[in-house]
Image (cartoon, rainbow, N blue to C red; front, side, top):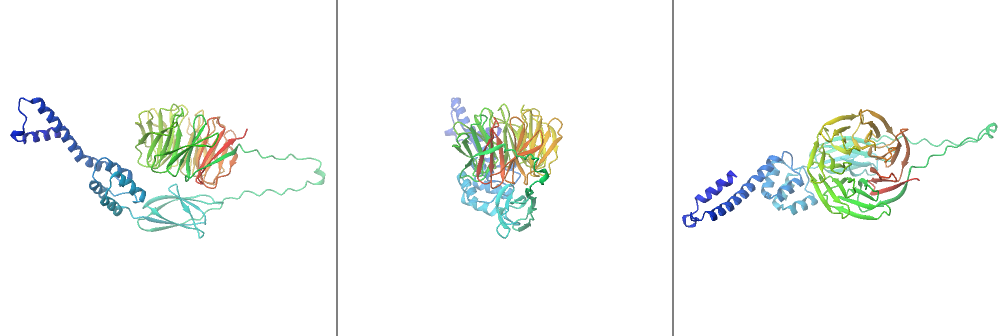
Length: 516
């Protein structure tokens, strides 16, 4: 205000005598001064906005940040100056170029961004022919008949690679890529132990022929396939049932959220608005809203009845990997690859808490049934329990050997299930933080876990293309569901326990019905 007052005074003092307002007309003079003050404020804001942005930016610029600058009124030339000062962290793809043009980027700015784009690094994989290759948890392609795959769209720095192939255990490694260089990574996949062949049936000896032996009858599967829901989308990374079990939602690689009616399999809505892969979905407890998290670093809340986008929550600095509503529906939690978990007020969209104890990506978040705790699973191989009311860390659960991809509370809140890339499902005592047991049987990383409403079973989805059901009381595998042709990255159970849904990289969502 002082700056604006000084501008006003300077302007008034330099007005020629014939133009000055007579002293008798003080009221009109005040009006003119107010107008001058407003103009002065606008000029000061326009001059200081780029400076504030420059102070805020500490890392290389990304596309959303440049869009924010342009749409906030910062000139393309000033944006170019900031980009040259701080660098950029993206390649100017056609999609990025279109987005920047819509925000007001000029040809000069686009040419500067092309010049500043980091030199691409080349990653060459040499492994088993037909192996699926994932880089930073995104499918990058399959190795050719000679076992090679060349990837030339990566930036320099550390990247996580994972390989999966039929009959082999998953391989995982972090590699460092140098700018404008080719890095070759030879990978020898370890063959999975084949299932034991059935023993030949031989006739009993003559003296024992009269004593019949009881035959072992395998237990029927706990769930059977009801239908397969396919679409034009690419991979499906998240699935969730509405609280009443009527609807099924899935987050997809094509940046959309798909909704189906469970009873008929009829497609209801395709929710569009995210600018990148949708990797997380969750329904509010009252079924009115659906939340989605995306690699575009935002959380969106949608009205289920209309399919309309209701609110966008921004604040994460990297991909949002998980979302979860509190049991009363007042809060929404999100976990991100920026290493934080956040809690938002659903009604206002205000960020209430930020949990920063993890050193690496937060893949999964879940509220306890009473809403008192928030659990978070991370790439740092730990699970943390947070007191939602105070924001304090309660305890850290350690025991997994690789990243923890998924966490889920039991219905009574006494124990917690976790799924990890180390191919195990672990159960934990919430009160003590001690490991109850480890469930082993998958031949690939476990990407998602869910608990049946009665707490009797835990479902797990894996890169070995299967979903397994584990009985909690006996700690044994009771069912394996086959049918997907690629990694199964998501699993969910309906509130009545009647249906199970699984989402896969094979571009399908499968709906399984519990056997009566």
